[in-house]
Image 1 (tube, chains in turn purple, cyan):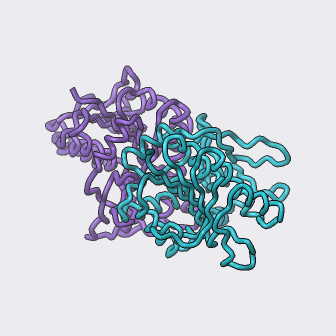
Image 2 (tube, rainbow over the protein chains, first blue to last red):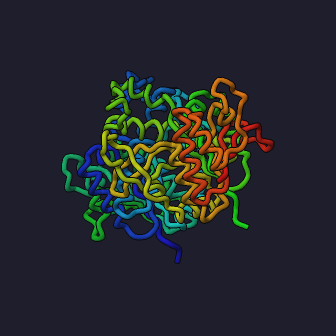
Image 3 (spheres, chains in turn green, orange):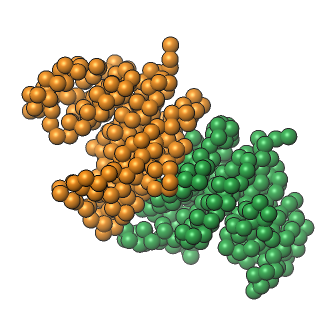
Length: 259
Length: 259
């Protein structure tokens, strides 16, 4: 029997609220087995960027990461948010180790190719250094990832945190019995967007296709679901979507995804 | 025979100059044996602080770290400077892992007690978690430390980078044959402050006392020398002070300190 690994991604809204962040970190610290946390940056990067006089650059309605925005991302995601979470988790008895994709060469990426839009310093993931990560996990460390990758030539990139969580899960699924958890503000994937309690408790490939065809999966959920099935199609055992109380020992109602 | 460990601290001036930083990281990456890099933050923190409208607070002529300044330190030292160095070292083939004192619970500290001055969020080091650090070193990682510590209760602190380097050396000297290198812009400790070539090649306790009595050790050098002898008095084998070329395989003229 292989060892269990939980990869838990917490979104921006959770991070901005000190009370909610504290709760999710307590639940995370109590979770048994090997675990990895992946965090977004929330609005703090935008706030710091604004205060530094760096305007969010848009091209064709898409946000791009220029050199100045990348610096802010490195400061806020890699510095302020990451180290604050690490310090908090250490106080809860979790031996947290903050990482970007450059640390331990954990996540290599390349600049997103320019098609309609040049996204700037945005990285698409090439590979996970599972050997280095398993050394850290087996030595009792709990990696805490911010949403930064690198190209192994000295360049850091901004990369979507949901994607990083999925890629880590896929990259480690050959070594551990890996589950992926996407924590956000809703209870799960909703059948009816206007009804917060209409959580779909189980989604398999067939249901996923039906939901796609019915147009029931809205903007933000589309890439998240894509990441979920990418992970499931690449040896990840289970994916969970829900709010933080799904991390309880007796998990609350949420969405579980399988092939 | 115990394994060799080199702890190398690079100062602020080196970090600000891209060319000099690149050179020192190349020399660092070529250095054989286990190694740890400790970096200061340079003027970048002041620059970012100014742009954010955060004024440097002084009390009785001493700089203090209030909550806003600590946030800047965490962003700049723990984020921007640390991750940029890590990415650069990875491109040079060194398996760098960026850390604050909170990561892996590496460096515990307490808030500096208030006497004449309340320094704010400045930490005095209590202990080094040598067990966690030796796991990382033995697994082939190269820790890159910024000048931040924590109290294991969730609070991060600003701590002098020279002090962190000395404390890491002392904390690991029982496990490794430890040498400490302070890299700065001068060739070493100078006999005559007005002559850059008057490097004192060897300082032992007797010479140190003589220099102190003669008043030859100036402001910035006083705490540095104090850190050196603190390390030497606590099992660290050798301490070196000089510019980056002392890291060459054939080291340039510099100051070596022994008991």
